[in-house]
Amino acid sequence: MLIAPMLMALGATDAQPGFVTRIFGLTPTPTQMLGLFVLLVLQRGIVVHTSNMASQRIEINLVDGLRSRAWEALLHCDWRTLSEMRQTKNASLLISDVDRAGTAVSQAMTIVAKAITLIGIGAAGLAISAPITLAVGLASVLVLLAYRGMRRKAARLGEHLSEANENIYMTTAEGLGALRVIKSFGMEDNTVTKFRSNFLKLRIVQRSYLRDSDFAQIALQSGASLLLAIVVWLAIYRWGTAPTTILPLIALFARALPMLADLQTSLQGWAFCRPAITAALTLIGQAEASREPDSEGAIPPNLSREMTVDNVTVRFAGRELPALKSVSLTIPARQITAVVGPSGAGKSTLADLVGGLTAPDEGRIFVDGIALYGGLRQAWRKKVAYVQQDPVLFTGTIRSNLTWADSSARDEELLQVLSDASAHFVKGLPDGLDTPVGEHGRQLSGGERQRIVLARALLRGPELLILDEATSALDSESERVIADAIIRLRGRLTILIISHRGLLQQVADRIVSLESGTARDMGAALSSL
Image (spheres, rainbow, N blue to C red):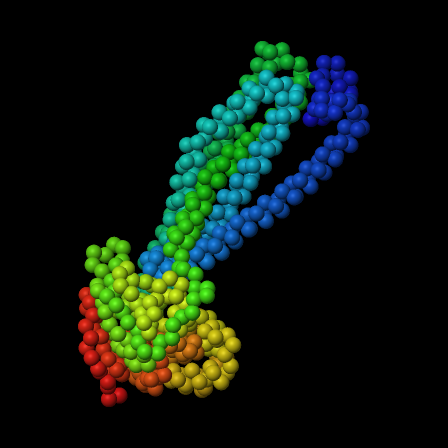
């Protein structure tokens, strides 16, 4: 902008009026222009700093916002939809792909910044020589259009990168969870080979993108330089443009050339990262579309007489036969009901229904004659405690795992539920309630973990306790200890036992048989235990 007026100020008689002269109608002295140059550089530094800070803030807000929204959507998603999702894919998206979405936003902001700067350079060029600037601008647009195919390829590579990340998360999670099996089968080398293979696929995608980006840079800079040289040659030898006009234009175009290359790189980067945004928004859309009804204001019913399963049918996508078909049964309050049957009979599906985790496709669930539907079903879960086959403990202490169910519980209450769950072993531990359980509770035995989980469920003060294959993976002694605890709970709350074998069936007041999705009441089954 200052070259042309500087030339005029230095006495060049054929110099064209510069940007400053045309805009302000002034011809500054060289000293004034040098001062203006320093101010412009300072201003540019301030603008760049402000832009960088704003860019980082926008990127962080978007990444954290997408991650939080996706996590919240998953947590509030209907259980049936959630259980059909691949959770390793969700983990990969929440941890890895969402960060790439932030990179996509950063690239988009770079595109905007470079475009604005190029527009500014173009405006300065138009002020010096409109024909030459328009010719160079048209050539630049044609160059960018020529790279559409490479940007489409970058988008495909971005999708392959998401798939590679998902495979890595899946392999890593499965491997860490199966270390004992891997070592006992002597499969260490095979597992390492599979692990390296997944990372090799990831690196192939990354190298392909880098190679394409570098090729695009080389080709664009070379092609744009050739076009610029042709335009300048024509301006000098065919159009008779004065050197004092050419020099400022060359300076402007030399400034614009690397920015044009950066613009193409950012467009390619945006195309590469855009699939991550698409994947995140797709997950959020799917989870929010299956969002559970709001339970605010819903008052859950009290279970004082019975729960009724009335002609219930449940179907799952991809399965020809329903998981439950026209099932009807009654679960008396403050009694122990066992639902038995082979694997795949629909027992856990029934447990999810009466626990309020999911709703039937046909039929209804009643609690003391009140139908569970909408927000009332979600509110009912506050009165239900669930103990599954694999005991879930969090890294921390026995105390922190118990108070996860009730943060206000006092030590007296914690010791009472531990006693009710036959978890007397806690008193003998060196640190008692403050004993660390290790990652996933691995410092405790399987039976000890399950008793802690049962105690945590009782601390919730449930009206319905569901035990879903709670002792199927335990040794006979641990199973008997938990069975004794269940016997002592008889009459205090309603207990539903899901089982296909074991002692817990023998402590039930009545048994319901499930097979191929249909139910049959087997009557009383009070044991001599």
